[in-house]
Amino acid sequence: MGRFHFTLSLMRISPVKIILVFGVLVLVASASPARADYSRLSIPQLKYEGGRYNPHLTALGSLLGQVARRTSIEVKRESFQVKLSDPDLYRYPFLYMAGDQEFEPFSSEDLRRLRDYLNFGGFLLIDDNTSKINSKFDGSVRNMIASLFPQVPLQKIPRDHSIFRSFYLINRVTGRTLINPYLEGINVKGRTVLVYSTNDFGGAWARDKLGHWAHDIIAGGERQRQLSIRLGVNIIMYALTLDYKKDMVHLPIILERLRRYHSP
Image (cartoon, rainbow, N blue to C red; front, side, top):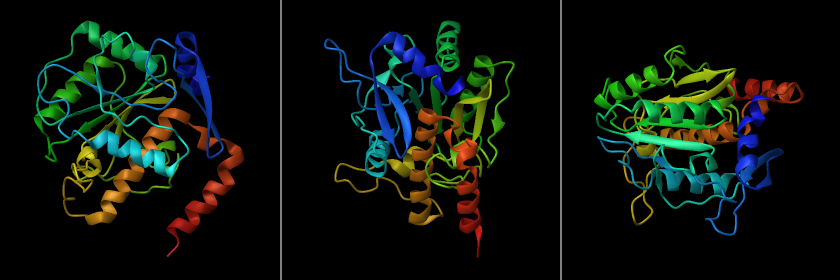
């Protein structure tokens, strides 16, 4: 039931459209006559109080451009923000929260809204853009998550998780920098509902007004940037398809590809 949970939520709110993504059926909200076009995948940035919620203005649009180019998903690249109080929150299966400064604690009402959103099938990616160890943003994030799910600890995501094979086969965790060689996440009833990266994904994805990369990669070069983009694509694909790649019918193919990938 887990993989259809958010789909059912969308069906209660608005019509849906089925699209085929490399053999995966994905349901996205369709447009209604009086509202914006929801037939394409759009990812809002979570707007919160205090700090700076959008350090890399073009990061998300750039990543969505890569999703459109590399998959058959139709996307809407325009940047926009939502608050947790936004009545349209449930129209979006994916939220992106970024920052590079300490921020104000979420109110109990906003924590409830976010908890409900995640429990009902939504997904949240949190991205520390500071490129620093133990940043103030990191401290605020960990405090927020502890209040959000006090009974569920933030844990390292294991390398056999579907996130690392939802589209590309990936064996490294990167970003603009490499603060931690792993992602962290929150699991609810067998589903990862929240992913946290300390490696500044946005800095690796962002482009300037001329279309050039906005920031240099720290230490790893362009290979590290491409791995960061692939991991971003994988995270979006996981949020849309969940554990599709764990279905037993695909396991022999996946294992063979992994064997070849790791062969010298």
